[in-house]
Length: 121
Image 1 (cartoon, rainbow, N blue to C red):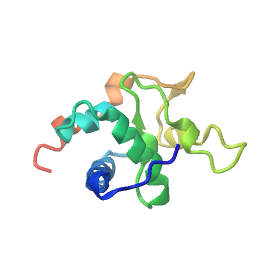
Image 2 (image 1 turned 180 degrees about the horizontal axis):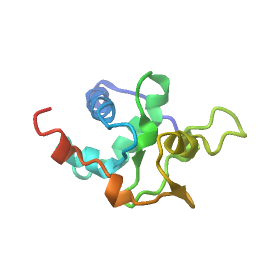
Image 3 (image 1 turned 60 degrees about the vertical axis):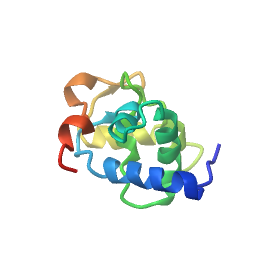
């Protein structure tokens, strides 16, 4: 499903993109952690919609955003072709992140929480 940007959600999406651009190489965060940081704790699904729409923008490392337990739930949105189903996983692996069965290994260890990391953002 493609979510069209409206004036109402455009600002939220842009705020999400600013946060995602801050996720360091080799680290991951979750949809919920981003929503919580933005003061919209129940809006993790909207963060996911922003990630789906981010592929039309440059410099948004959306592959670093996973679900609350480290599962690559958005991987279907990274395909550039029918044979590219592992693109999200491959992008993460290229950053040294270990993936097993579509899940980030040592998720808690490499989890990047914007509430702790972006105090002065």
